[in-house]
Length: 344
Ligand code: HEM
Image (cartoon, rainbow, N blue to C red; front, side):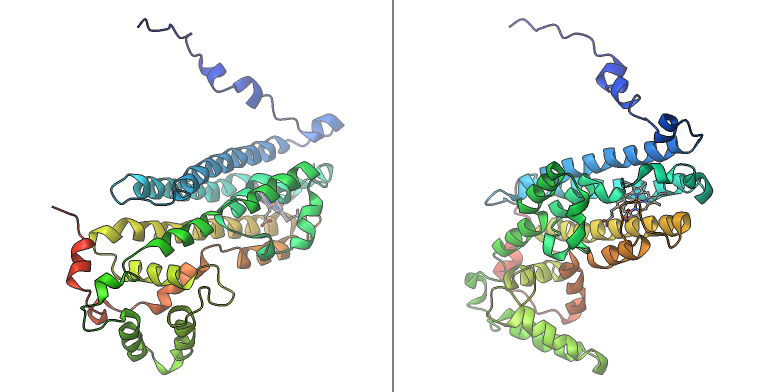
């Protein structure tokens, strides 16, 4: 078959530079006011929005992978997901560093044009809210939810609502963890002297607690030992939490190495977003002090509330309270150890 000739690709057309490089329209210029730093302010925000777009792209791919009813160990899926989630962490590192560039704009420089921006604010960044929603931040858990939608156009409210109603990464990871057979599958445990892994684990855990840590046992019991499918107030089901802890404990076994990497990377994403939030708060305090935001919130105070409460995978982070040193771990049945190994 004859190969169709493709027209040559030209750098600026490929990158649509005519659009991007003509998309900086300072309000100060429109008003005939001199504000030399507004260009930097616009470009920084645009650069962030491009990174946010890339993060949403990666999240869509990863969520697509986890929407499959089963993810087989012998496919590239988990590796691909970990790889993409790690990329999000790298982007967030750049995003944190980029704040330093904007900090070269002093508070006085900002005042030259700040009033011209009202009521626009990063608060209206739909992509940022979509990232939070895609990860798993629900409307009910949003800080300041009573007024955040009031700042958006109806079309943007729709976009955020749509993202909030889709299956988030948190929900999909919960389902994936629930499907893991290792602790649940009776076949592994019936011939084993300690048929209940969790009773044995609980005994070892109790023995490891210091007097000041006794209240941990109540939490341990409510998550791992009770019959309820969902311990009260938790996003992760009991089965999912059990399997997540199991992965953390036995992560040295070949088949659990990538699942562990995955869980760890989710915690890194939470951490990197938190770093960004705190860097942003420092920038805000330094630039506008105690003044309210252009978006009408209480400014730094609102942002601190969001930073404290918007951790999406905090229940996974909490599981580290229930780890035990390797030498105290219950021994696994032989068949399970074999199934957790690479096959010859
Ligand atoms: C001089 C620089 C900046 C100042 C003074 C500032 C100030 C603020 C303030 C006060 C808020 C709270 C909402 C409000 O009342 O407006 C806010 C929210 C926000 N800003 Fe900035 N900001 C700055 C730069 C940036 C940059 C470069 C980005 C990058 C995209 C950004 C993204 C956001 C986002 C996403 C929110 C919403 C955060 C949330 O709801 O948790 N800001 N900003």
